[in-house]
Amino acid sequence: MTNEQKKFSVMKKFVLFLFIIALVSACKKEVTHPVIYKVVVSTGHPTYSVQYLSGSNTTVSQGPFSSGMWVSDKIEKEAGSTALLTLTGGTGGSYKLYIYVDGTLYMEGRMDDPYGPETISVVVPQ
Image (tube, rainbow, N blue to C red; front, side):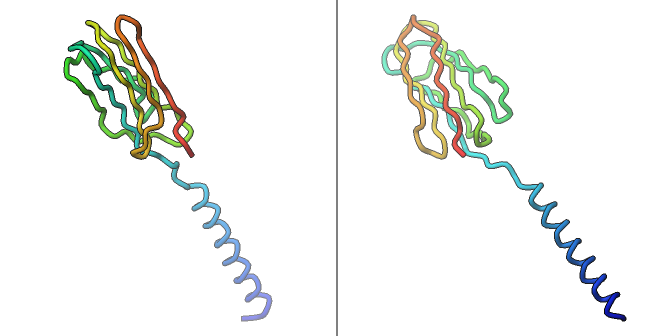
């Protein structure tokens, strides 16, 4: 093999290496964080419904509930997206609303029926 052929072979390998690095960088996975929504009834025995944003940012509606507490499943949300919880009361009472990100309380709200609905939201951190 001549020196010219060796140089060409090294250049080909170097270009292939750069291509692989660029491809791996382009396939970088989005950062996500676990989000949990929670509602606690403070007073009374009311019925209530909730709406929240899913991992794909679609609105999910659930209820009516009559239990003293409702907790969502863990939802993976992309960094920079919005976590949003809306509470609609039905029969009176007081409520506390919570949004947890990575197991840490990020937003808290309160609603007293018949005033509402009440919405709280937070931008998921990077």
